Image (cartoon, rainbow, N blue to C red; front, side):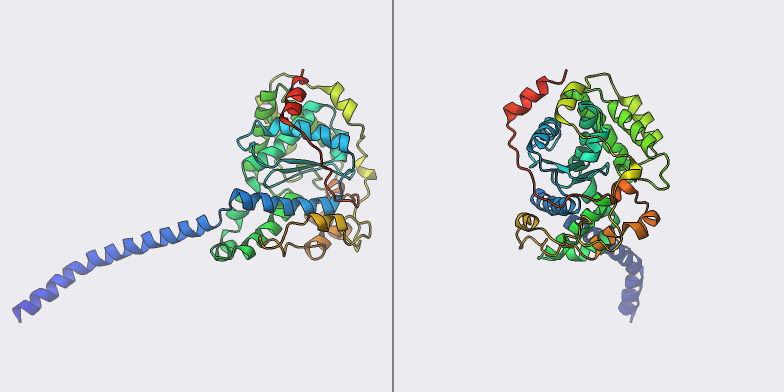
Length: 363
């Protein structure tokens, strides 16, 4: 009996310690589970590039591509001069001019940078173009799109990301990425980071880095009578605050206006004259065209998991219904602008020697 009593006393004394140890063990296991879940949301560079290619296809289908090799050659030379200065120079960078009067730019994950001919028309010199491209390149270099989606949608994505078949996860990520790229849903920190990145990287090349502020000033003046935020940088921090921060970081340098004027002949359309996609328009460009053979040819092969990326219905139909819902969603004429009907990439060849020669002209 005495041994039984002592045993009971011993167990009673040990129980709190055991319970505490068990609690710590449970917390450790939960922490590991959480870490494993978050790790499953990471994507490889190969996945990022394929994801970006699909997003780019949809952006091109929405706005069309300017079929001018000379313009693409010039923009690509400048874009590559910037990209090779980044921490991710080996990405398959592509620089695409979209066929729309809307003033806008879009960076897809993996190195796909788009700028509209409307934006090229509003830009006044090469340094300004370098600054805008530098901002978009910053989003890619720092993986802002993918990281923002992971942070905001972790709980929704974890169950799919952890599966051995990552197809559903990558499908959903691609749709979210397209929506984010098109709507410009970056948070304040990411936007200011991209501004800072643009100033720093254009300074390295010898450009007048404050020209990003010049462009934003012109853009702000252009949009002053718009009832909602409009087009490029529509969701960014207040423009005047951004301009001030850019001025504080900027240094003097080259604008290279003559070379820009030689290569870019577009003129910006007045914001009040931009044709927009109207409610009920078929297809992505508002031209009544529901599909495009060239776009289909360039669609990434199935098997990666992006085969179910949204096509020209559903979310895209909502995109087309700008007249009815644009104001409520903060979408102005630049964002809602009609585009061309040819999404085919204009292929140009740019060598390292070409880029080096181009950089010598930054004076």
